[in-house]
Length: 428
Ligand code: HGY
Ligand code: MN
Ligand code: MN
Image 1 (cartoon, rainbow, N blue to C red):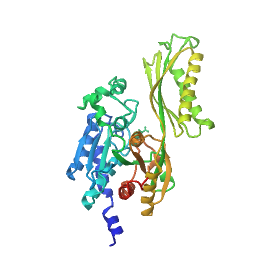
Image 2 (image 1 turned 180 degrees about the vertical axis):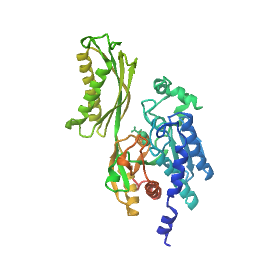
Image 3 (image 1 turned 90 degrees about the vertical axis):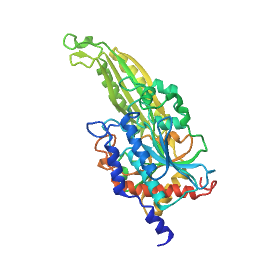
Image 4 (image 1 turned 135 degrees about the vertical axis):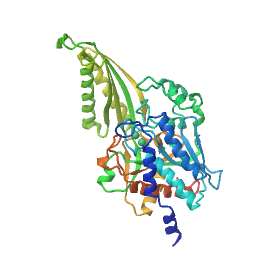
C-alpha cells in the first residue's frame, strides 16, 4: 500500500460512529416534535459535555471558554505556528432537526479520532470547537458564542438581548454557570488561528438534486432581523363595527404579505424575507388584537440589497399602519453582513474533494453560520454535505446520510492537513 492509499485508508471517517454520535446528541432534547435544545440551556451544556468527553477520551485537553464555547486542542509539532480549527454548534431551533450544527460538531470529533488513532501530528495545533448558541431563535441575535470569540458581542449586548420569557442572554449565561462579565476572555486575536473549516448540512436542496456530494461555500448570506410593533385598539369582536376598528393583527397580516411581495419582486433577485413569528395581544378569540410584534428576517448575499430591502419593509409597514389607523415602531434586532470566504481556503477544500474524485459545487449559503462571525479573526471555509427530503431544515424532517457526512469529513480532514502542510506564506 503506497503512502497515499495508506493515508486514504486511515483517514476514512466511520459512518456508523457518526450515526451513533448523532443519536447520542439527539437524545438531549426537550419533548415534542423534532429537536429542541435552546442556546444557553442545560440541554446545550449536556451536548457540550458529550462533545468534550469524546476529546478527553482521546487524551486531548478540552476547556469551555467564558462564552460557553467548548474547545479541544490537538497539539501541533510547532507551537509557534498559528492554529487550525474545525467545528460547529450543538444548539437547535425549537422543533428543529438532528443535523443542523451537529453534523459539523460530529465531523470535528471524527477528525480528531482519525488523527489521534493514525498518530498523525500536524505542524499546527488543531482546535475542535463546539460554538455556543449559534441559533438566533432564542434571542434574535444568532451566533452569540462565535460573536464573542470575534469580539462582535460584548457583555453589555447580552443584557439587551431577551428571549420570549423576558430572560436576558446575560441571565441565561449565568443560568448555566457562566459569567457574562468575563466573555471578553473568549476572544481569539487575529493571527491566533490561521484557518477554520466548518462542515455543515446544506439546508437546501441543490446538492441532493444535482447528486453532488460536496459543497464548497463561497459566500455566506447576511441577515437583518427586525421587530415591527403595531399598536391598534383592543375591543370586543362582537360589539365593534368593522369601520370602527384599529386591528393590529390585520395590519400585521398586510405587513407579512407586503414583505413577501417585496421579496418576490424581480428587483430583489436572491433576497429572502420571512416572518416566522408574530406576538399577538391579548390573544383572545373574542378581542380584536390591540398589539402585534412582527419578527422579520431578511437574508441576502448582497449587503446593500439586504439593508435596502429591510428599509423597504419598514417603510411599507409605516404606510400600512397609516392606512389602518394603527401605531407602528420598528426595532433592529440583529444585523449581520454577508461574508465572502477566502479563495485560499476554498481552494484547499476543492483540491481535497478532487483528490478523492468527489464531485463538488462552489455555492453560497442561504443560512448564516459561526464561520461567518469568526471571519473577523481568522480565514474561514465551509464544507457542505447534502440535505435530503428536498433540503428541508429547521424542522423535524431535516435529514442527511451518515455516509454523506463521513465523505464530507474525509474532505475536511484532508483540507486541514493540506493547509497545515503548506508553507506559512504559500498557502494563501
Ligand atoms: O438561521 C440561520 O441561518 C442559522 O441556522 N443559524
Ligand atoms: Mn447551523
Ligand atoms: Mn440553524
